[in-house]
Length: 234
Image (cartoon, rainbow, N blue to C red):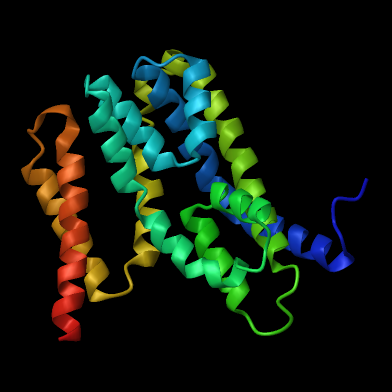
């Protein structure tokens, strides 16, 4: 059975899949490290995969694993994950005009597949001139390619778990992955101010229990960005 309503929809879907391929080189090691980190934090392989399926967010999975390993209370873990996911509200607001005509089922699926990369590629494709019909299929093709690759990588990492030798020093992959995501989005002075303030506050508050330095840095960074924008507009 052909899942595509038109040949154009199929072409858009395959184009989205192809556009995701270059990003898989970073997705695979990042997902593997996320799976290993969850198991190392005391979660079972099943729990690690369930967390990945329910969140589909690398940073949320890693932060959750770190907080659980530090013995943080559940409310702290949930608050940290929520703060780190606030950016998805902005993503949704930016992309909603392009998908408002779609059914609820489509919008739910697209929101579940939304990632930093998916948002950037989606907005770019939706904003291009020409016929906008079937461009949601491009978004789905891109998102599903990342999703399947990410989950397979997390499963591999979760199964490997603590068997991975510490001499591999896989932590650097996480740092590189975050840098690759962060660098392209630092386009304005407000972005730069938010990043600097968040980093400084996180370092200063590094001694706080339950990894609260992460929450403090995130909130401080958001506040710095908002304050800078207000001062600039005035």
